[in-house]
Length: 337
Picture 1 (cartoon, helix red, strand yellow):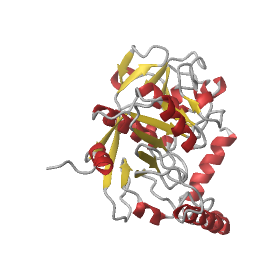
Picture 2 (cartoon, helix red, strand yellow):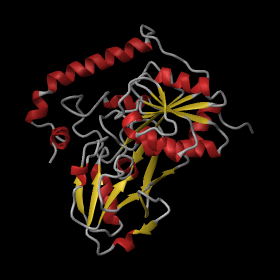
Picture 3 (cartoon, one colour):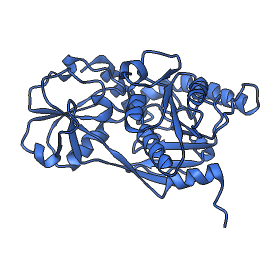
């Protein structure tokens, strides 16, 4: 098992309970929580500058470290808001990319350049996508080059308070808040009470609703048809892979979600979990078998790394009730009678 994978597993195990290891880190967690609170207060009091853009900003984020389903939700919102006649642009930190500077995710960009999630968003939507550690600068560059853009979706960035936001959406997956302690003793970037100040909470999968007086929406990720990495025009269903010796690879926030999805499709496979945003090598994929199954996000980084056929499983978010309608009402107000 790669060292990074062992470290990721160790952290997740530590964060699931309030055991001796987490308790040993508790003083550092208190310090992190204090600094986090002071920083947010400084923005609230105007001691640190908040930048307001000329268009509404919808931030999709979470309060725990690691992925919880923010990118599928951002993708869904981009598609739904476009269908409603809006012209969204997307900004992201570009985690996993090799540049901290503002950059457009344009033709020829790779995951190592701009990050895997922004590249996926650019490929799956017709929206302009810009990355940069400074989300304000990324959004300003996007608007300068795309003056018809009438709203910004920020993929991650709940804690990026320099960017003023119109709507805040927090995503929670089935892991919940785990031990409920701040980093590094637990997974929390901000206290659980922060959920009470967002505009909406989206529960990914079988997540439990937290105690918060805000609207709650449920998201399910659905996908049944695979396509070949080297030729997306070649597709198959899970039943077509029955009897094959399969390996499943996932380097996402919670790899087990992907493996459980494959199991629900009736597939037998050997699971290989990697850290979120993992940069794959041919050694990682040196399996003996008939085929490899992957998420779209992982497949962006795996072309040409293995002689085995790679089958990619795109997923689509399904959200109830209508979150896009909720967001538009937050932005535009309720329709006039």
